[in-house]
Length: 394
Image (cartoon, rainbow, N blue to C red; front, side, top):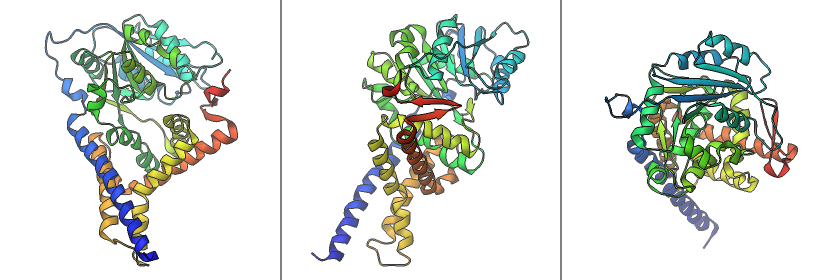
């Protein structure tokens, strides 16, 4: 077999493999489009259908002066019978504490507290959430971030969903607000990683802990379940504490439910390219089990799936390449199609899916940055704090 024949065979094998993988992603995305639960399903109250117990809304806040006021304003405006909001200022370097206190204007439902000093071996957010849980007065614990905006009536819908689904942990994926091209191209990939990789029925109908996902932007625990899995103390050094807590829920035989906020709960997670790059750099290695080889392999894998077909297509205009142009076009269509479906389901801009190859290139740059930081500095950093690997923690 000559070189040309070998090249053609390799193209055929690679193209078939990529087609199967991308087709699977598109199929999962389409399946989730119809089966992924949404808060809007529980938007209408049915008298007597579910209780409205008092709840504790718990917000860890570090350097959130730019948004804490708006977050608390929306929460304190919720039409819900009985709830408390506790903000724990995690050693902020700005006016987070003062602004949070001012927003309450003496409202007895709001408590603003200074956090204790960060102990060795703890991540900052985990330590803050641990303290918040100890301060909470009620048995339904809602951990939410300071950059999450609660729409009118959202708190009641979330609590209603907990009881309607009879769940021990409800995690709500807020609708992401993205401004500017970097946010639009990178931030929605978080939802893509769930909607195109993880069928929701695996999460909800199987006992396997690996089939679990969650977002710390909104996690609702029954206190008994939270205590049963050890709370945030059990994940004290974990960057992706949300996913780990969700897996512990399933491993303990408790019930986990994921739900899309469908516009009722919003979040602008990162502001501008710098925060996008820093935030994803902080998380991406942890999302790969802190394994540099695994993250590197994942980066190559996604470049091959989403970027190489574009290179293949463009190259065909200048040199003779096998299977051109229909097969690279088909691969691009499958990848863009999966991204478009997840964008539609999560209320993102569907047209941005056309730039999926650029999104993957940006995420690849972030992955390499995370690897370099891990090798050079022994860990990542966020908001002025170094986040070393657990092996380096005291």
